[in-house]
Amino acid sequence: MYVLIVATLVLISNWALEYYRHLRYVNAIPIRIHVNGTRGKSSLTRLISSGLRAGNLVTVGKTTGTLPRILLPDGKESSIVRLMGANIIEQKYIFRYAASLKPDAIVIECMAVNPAYQWITERKFVRSTIGVITNARPDHLDLMGSTVQSVTMCLSNTIPNKGVCFTAEDEQFHLMKRVAKSRNTDIYKIRPVDVTDEEMEKFSYIEHKDNVQLALAVCQRAGISREVALKGMQSSNPDPGALKKYSHQTKDKKYTFYNVFAANDPSSTEFIYNMVTKNLHGNITKILILNNRADRFFRSQQLVDICHNIQYDYLILTGEICDKVFNYAMQQGLPQGKVLEIGQIPMDDLYKKISNLVNQEGHVIGIGNIADKAKYGASIVKHFKNKSNGKN
Image (cartoon, rainbow, N blue to C red; front, side, top):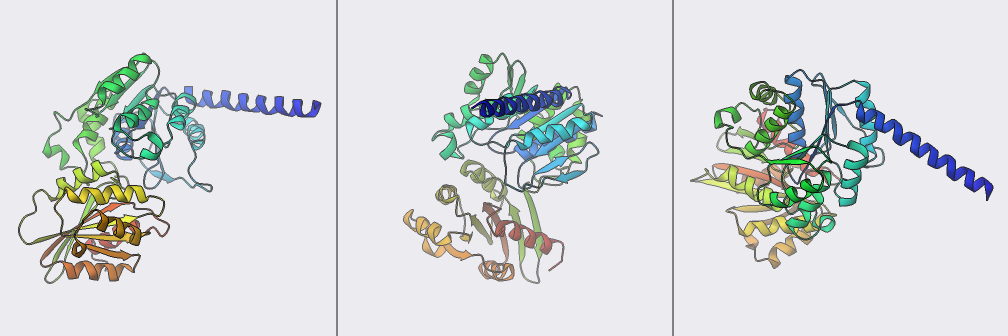
């Protein structure tokens, strides 16, 4: 019994010492920005980091999106290798490394989905001075609750205490405001009112005005002028999951592929699909590629459901559990002739099938999950990217 008591006391002492050390690393970084939300977290983390660096603030960023990255003060990036999968303890090690670089600011993307873990990440690991919530949309409903209101309350777990928070969320802002008030935090709703189309065209990828306006507000709070911050953002590297398009032309056909895999909740996917196809008229074939994961069947169901609301010519099912998703599509009344169950065939064979569906011009939109076990979604993106670069 005596040994057990001593061992317990030693263990508790080590935990306390480790936490004290972590707080030292945290407090050594004066500006701590915690980015949360349903969609756009990785892109926004990059935008803010680039804007702060452009204003000569030594800044470390960390994304957890398609591929986890550390964004270094000189603009270079370093991959994060996870031997045991994603774990919120990772944030502790990020702070230890970041503090060694003596930064003025850290911009860190929330990697937790479970509401309890979101609370722990903010209160114990990040302790942000500036909170950011991109938006609140119905996603991860199995963990966050069945309504957008419950999702909003979960995301609000990262609103800081006695700090400031910015969000581009409009409809659920009243809920965030209530939480912020209880934590003595000022919260601001940022809408895209003064970002011009000309300014957006200077980005090397398809960015959203909401994200840019939100990032500009955060940078301004940190003392960086709009002009300086925007210039830095326009020269930033996009997240691997950022919305990009790749075009190429053969002897008799033209193809454009849109990487929309990162927007894998139904609301965001439908919004982006309508955005990229709204000006497509005439003899143009619109093809959806829905890449599926075995552990994300509910998400596949949601994305099948939006097909009732959009105009498309074909829905191609790739990745895992395609038979299961096909059966669901038939149950929901999608036209059988429009739904093709492909699976994980070689990329050249997939491209030939797409080519056979296109008359003169085809616009192919990749949705769903980019990372299944075989990384089939990422392979689709790579194939069309290589096509656009003339590699195959």
